[in-house]
Image (tube, rainbow, N blue to C red):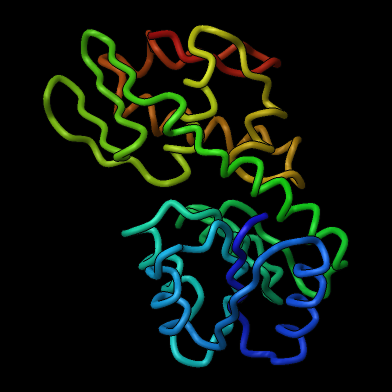
Length: 226
C-alpha cells in the first residue's frame, strides 16, 4: 500500500480520487494549495507518491514541484489541464515522473500510480555508490563528482542514470528507458534520450564527443560502462 498525496483545489476531484485510491488499498491525504502540500510532504511518514495539479490558488504547481525536488525524491505525477508541450517539458525537467492531462480516465491514472509505486522501490538504495576512475555517483544522496569536483545533475538526469546503472555494462532499450524515466505513456520519444544523454556526457565524460561511459547503441538503446 502506498501513501498518496493528492494536491488539487477542486474538492469534487479530490473526493473522486480519494475514493478510487482507497478502494485500491492506498492511503490518501489531500491538499488544496501548494503550501499545504509542501508541509504534508515533509511529514513523517512522507507520501510515496504525489498527484499534483499545476493550477493551484497560491503557488503554481511548477513552483511546488521545484521546491519539493530540493528536499525530496518522492514520485510525482502531474495532473493538469495544461496540454501544451512546453508545460509538459518544464514539469518533466523539474523532476516530475509522469504527466497526465485533464480530462483523464480514472483507470489510466490508477495504472500510472501503480507504475510509479513500483518504480519507487528505490533503485537508489539498490545501486548505492558507483565509482569509476574519474566519476563517483552516490545515488542515495544524489551527489555526483567528477575528478573530485561536484557536478549538479537534474532529477531527470539522475533517473536516467539510475535506470542505466542498475545493470552496468548491459544494454537498456530506448523504450525501457523512456518508460522508466518519463512514465508508462512514453516509448517512442527517442529525441528525449538524445538530449539528456548529450547533457550527461558534457557533465561526466572527459571527451563528450568520444564517450567512454555513456554509450549509444544506435536504434537500440544505451548502456553505462563503468
